[in-house]
Amino acid sequence: MSAELILHNAKIATNGVPSFVEAVAITAGKIAAVGRDDEILRLRGPQTHVIDGRRRTIIPGLNDSHMHPIRGGLNYNLELRWDGVPSLADALRMLKEQAARTPAPQWVRVIGGWTEFQFAERRMPTLDEINAVAPDTPVFVMHLYDRALLNAAALRAVGYDRNAPSFPAGEVQRDRHGNPTGLLIAKPNANILYSTLAKGPKLSREDQLNSSRHFFRELNRFGITSAIDAGGGFQNYPDDYGVVNELHRNGELSIRLAYNLFTQKPKQELSDFQSWTKMTKPGDGDDFYRVNGAGEMLVFSAADFEDFLVPRPDMLPVMESELKAVIRHLVENRWPFRLHATYNETIERALNVYEEVNREIPFDGLHWFFDHCETISDRNIERLKALGGGIAVQNRMAFQGEYFVERYGLQQAKRTPPIRRMLEIGVPVGAGTDATRVSSYNPYLSLYWLITGKTVGGLSLYPEENRLDREEALKLYTMGSSWFSTEDEKKGALAPGQLADLAVLSGDYFSIPEEEIKHLESVLTIVGGKVMHATTEFSKLAPPVLPVSPSWSPIKEYGGYANASEGALGASHSRALSPVCPESSTKNHHVSVLGDLGIWHLGCDCFAF
Picture (cartoon, one colour):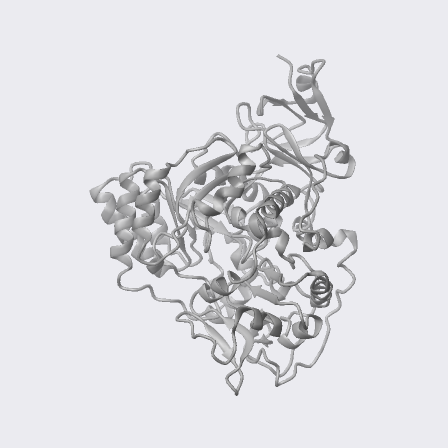
């Protein structure tokens, strides 16, 4: 039989044997054959679509083992993304322009994916600066999971005045007169940020459909063909899945999604999972859209949020009893599960529960895993291995490494997380980002972090023994991640019988200088044998352009991740020196320098670089 599609004259990384080939043939959405050009071109028939790869490097489609694309898609068209923006001056200019075009009662929202360490100025915006560029339009700027900055108009929109409520887990900062300044501080979790953000207007159903399609195409731009959705706060099942369900029914998904169900209310977790195990089951769906299991929130008493600006939170004494009830129910119903776990102390207690349940009801090959595991010990990696678990790692340290070093020291950061040790012990490991509210969704920032051990701001965290080579890192982002959606041998390699998902890269990932890795993009992304994204010499193959709605959406002007090569945001790279007013309303949340490491941290108001 002749192939439907042949891609040849390329450097194709297979993640198999041989490691590299020249051509690939695709039929019925799967890889039919790989090999030399002359071998594969023999499969050409009268209807075969043949694409010359122009000696480009091709990799298996990237698979993010932990991100939040369903929630991200619902909000993408609402958000002004600062991902990759090179300077604070550029970011504030974008904010000013977007505030002018955003109609009432809508807000301008900057929600995650950035850090002050990416900016030339190496500092956060002040509230005075935000109010100056947006005096009338509500602005909500969230930084990681540690704080949010609201201008005066946003404070009015959410009703935070002198009588603003106190949050049990968070702080509304006030001036000496008791008036909110606009700074919301997450202590020890992000509930105050989530609940305040939820007060903003939502997109209409039609705009959410458009927004989700744009976000998934944005992921295709980086060669992402699959993602495991980890649920998220204020992402209720099944209500908030209506949009992605409709896109799937209409054949309009451009990435494959396996989704986990995330419980939303403390003390109701077991009830949620009891209800969901009656409604659906893992594997329901198809290769494009399917149920994956439970988590990453299993019980609120086990959630150790990773705000390294505050001390490590101790989990409540009820953690074990609440977690055991949920884990027992999931194992009884053969539901894979995942649990957010930043610190070894939380992992230790969770493993105690898992081992106890396993003695009563054996896990017996059930795919379960921890997410994050920044400070997991060797002993707990071994315990996890004995129970058949995995670890999904993300580049959160690339965005928060400076904060971690400030609190715990550079020595502790060298194994945070201990990825090399995980692999030596033989634990399944998948790579990802935890986008979009902490890290950016750009997978090459994560690959760069795995390979170099550096943060977005350039701080070297890991010695050579805790870094990966380029092939190892790529395998974690492809084959490694497939284990976490129980799709082993189905995706992750360009091998006969596997799903035909691949990305043609803008540069040779295997040979370009390390600093250039984080600037890679895909110039041709194929999912199931169909072109989902194409540019440069492949632009004629691109799917039809999607209109943007609403008309004032930030992505219409700026897109998503900043493309510095286009010159729109690359003008300001100088390191500005400027005084910070001691009376600034972001008091105690400016940057200073820690020793001679060049680490910037919070806590000094007298200067900023």
